[in-house]
Amino acid sequence: MSGRRGVGRRNLIGGASMLILMAAEAGVAKAEELDGQLLALCAEYHEKEDEFDRLSDIFDALDRADPEHRRIDAVFTPLVGRIHEIRDEVSEIAARTPEGLRAKAKVSLRELAHGGNLGGGPANEADRVVWSLCCDLLGRAA
Image (cartoon, rainbow, N blue to C red; front, side, top):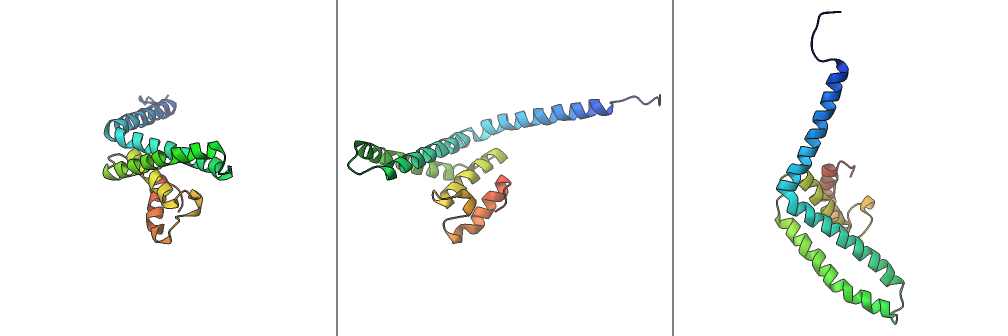
């Protein structure tokens, strides 16, 4: 025995892992505290955009005389209105945590794609730098 007293390697690794988990949990809690409204709006934005995409696919496949076509058409206006309201609210709220920044970046990417393929880059080439910045924030290659 070397006579050294202290923390063994396994205990050190286990303790470090626990600290990392606690920090991650504290980060999520802090993000909810500081950016809760922003995070909720960003989540709602993606839900509404997903709903719009789903309805668009159905709408485009229907005959104009189909009653379902008219029903979906009536849903689009308030849905698009809410998406625009959310976008405006998100743009007015300052992100105060990394989670808030990432949530805004995801909304920005979707907006820049204008409903297009997120992996394909922005719909407008003038937005390439903003697209790249959002990808950097999300840890993805632009």
